[in-house]
Length: 301
Length: 269
Image (cartoon, rainbow over all chains, first blue to last red; front, side):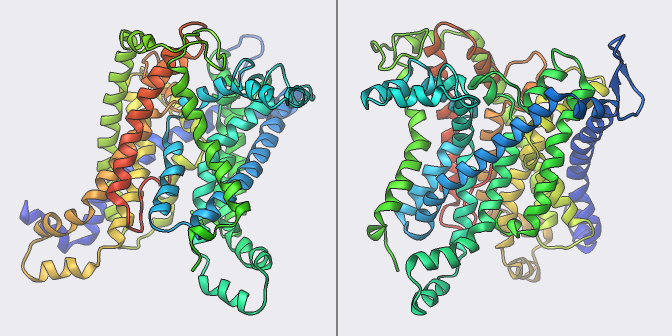
């Protein structure tokens, strides 16, 4: 054992190989191999007459994906939702991150960490289920609107086309609220990290040079924290694009990309179409990551 | 500098509302575990009862699902600890060809949407002719747990002054002793924290698991099926409380183990 230890220390390259081979084999075979298998399947297509998967590379499935109006609707709906959710998350997260970064010290700092971390790690399904209960027609939201004599406002919002529905738990608005809730911690933490890295002497300098607090915020703090916002938006975007459980549990009829992937591989048995659909978020996220990299967001992760 | 007492009112209100938004659904879960109404989510509850706790604990399928989830979590965590620590040990000091690519490869399973990992694993499981089982669930979970362990351990190793390792070797300790007496004690808590987080992640996972589980039921899958039952809904709430307890304890422990350091565990998921 000792001799082996010494020998490995004397030959760092062999030691490196010993350390790296098992994880590389795991990630390479299990993960990259699977991704490759997925991409290959997206090049197959289903024969319209026999319903059998034709294992010949072609772009037929992709053609079907982009020429069917219903599929385009799904992609557009998912993208719009991802953008709206990202924006809402940024707006709700910023004040929390700002307070945690600049005003919390010692015990209150720990409180903010835990107050964000615990909901983030609380069970995914449990949180979605909680919102089903909150947003139900007979649930606490309706009760609350009644107590405040705002029932007319709630019904008015639910009556709106596109975002409304019979109840909050069966509307696009409901889906939007739940998505925003679910990914909010993923936005708070990177913004907080970016804000904590803003050098305090810049703030003093700005104040010394006569800038008013809102000027300091707009011209120094906000630009310096933008990489954090973009880092957070990578999560909110990616998580929304790939989710297939939330819109099924809370929301109006109308599919999202993730639901299509799940449906096509399952009951429909059209693995090629499911694979092609799953390439869409991959492409969007790759483009988004390239944009984020140029904006310097990776230093804030 | 500025202190908590001088937090502007507007910031107090907006951040307070945000924090309330983050926490109140969890309270709702707890409340509905005691309601006497078992078909709708009527608010306020017409009455309160403890009977759903007894009904939930009497469900043998729930216990089976819980047992499977615990076993999967333990196995996936073990694999992730092993592989994650190996990568961390290889990456923390030395530069080598392809290091950046390897970092990307590690983060890919959590950067890409879970559904892609899920369907990708399913298609290769099918291609390989495997039957989905507990083994395939563990396969998927370990893949995205590796990076959690890696992140925790590598952050800690980076703060170990390498001169301590050199001093140990100079003073006659062999590499194995140096690892046992210097390196391991330094990274032990980060290893534990990473393992706890990996377990919490695995215990709760559903997006990938629905693809790789076949007919097996982990606790989240049991829970998901339960959401479509029209009656006895508070049973789901009781189990929800149980699930929150099982995931919160490891998170708090991981936090305690690493607080005060620069690499507080649990900030990434």
